[in-house]
Length: 273
Length: 65
Image 1: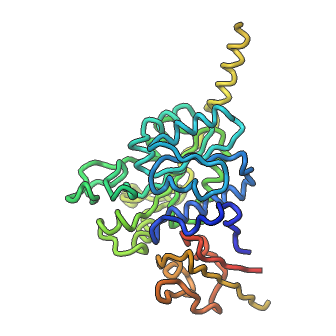
Image 2: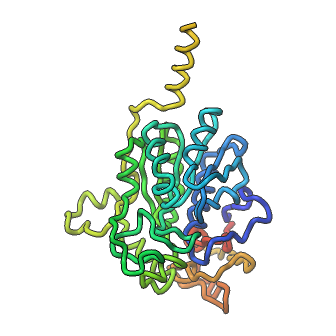
Image 3: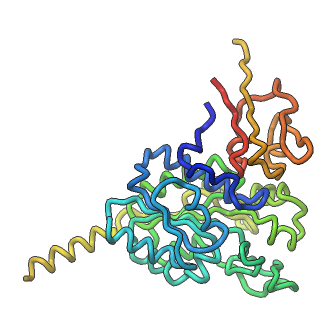
């Protein structure tokens, strides 16, 4: 049978606002399949987002949703999780929202290792506001604010998350649609802060400025650059130039989870009276 | 074993004509008809579901038994 996505969507919301060929829809489908696999209770699941194209995602899914200030998804989600530790909290947003405006909140959520899942849709640009370059735009690539090429080196979100202390970091692409839900399932099941970076395509503001003739060319680029972690082990450093590793990149089980630690603080404070 | 054919439903109201389903179908089952995707050769379909998985717009359903 065809998968019944509409069961999880708010009625009357489709067609969504994303441009033709935008990968955000593929990621949303992956998230819905992951929620279905885990049989998440919709009343006990919160999706929190900031501002941007990718952050429009919670508006379509019929569970507890929160569309917050720009970059502040992690801050609001931390509040939700602290108030209701039993709730499944999923964050979603784009690369600009997560690593520029919300960069501070992002690294500190990673550091605390609070049990949430952050899905970052990295399309290398600020799509909604007109194609300004983001911290993830690769060096030399063009955006509306860098018409002669971006001089900045781009962020590697996965490395940033590992460095900041996230305990589960995975990467997928919008082309490898089959893999997205599996990564998200593993991320939600992980106890601790989990980051899933999905490399995405933005044909409207990024593609046309960087000589991608069509959505298909952008999708083929994702297909070419992605190398699964296991395959990369057998490849030489020269073969890996310009490639991006996909799959589960980092997993750590030993680090204590924040809400559990905070509950202990409450117990200690009560005992001290 | 006799091959059973799926039913490919394309919801034109949702389709934005991005070509992804047509280009990445391994058996060349779909084509663009004007603005929308449509089924060209249903006989060739192997029910791999790649079109349904990759459609960003929730516009394709591959209904198998």
